[in-house]
Amino acid sequence: MGTEIDRTSHVPIFWQIKQDLHKKILSGFYKVEEQIPSEPKLAEIYKVNRLTARSAVTELVNEGMLYRRQGQGTFVCRQRVET
Image (cartoon, rainbow, N blue to C red; front, side, top):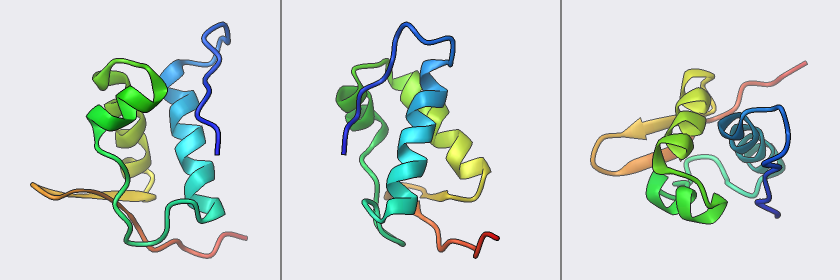
């Protein structure tokens, strides 16, 4: 799956990353209970500052798509059925 972001878009970069990660979770690219790449690794993948990657991950944590285990990483939550 692609990891391109549009730096000319009016959509904030962290939001584009959040949307890309969201799509990857829903598509099964990242599976339930699977650890996603670390924030430094996401920053490298998307070619952004680590804080930008952290903002995207934090949004998904706040939405209940991801959860953090201190000292272990960030993992995909079990998904609720969406109608």
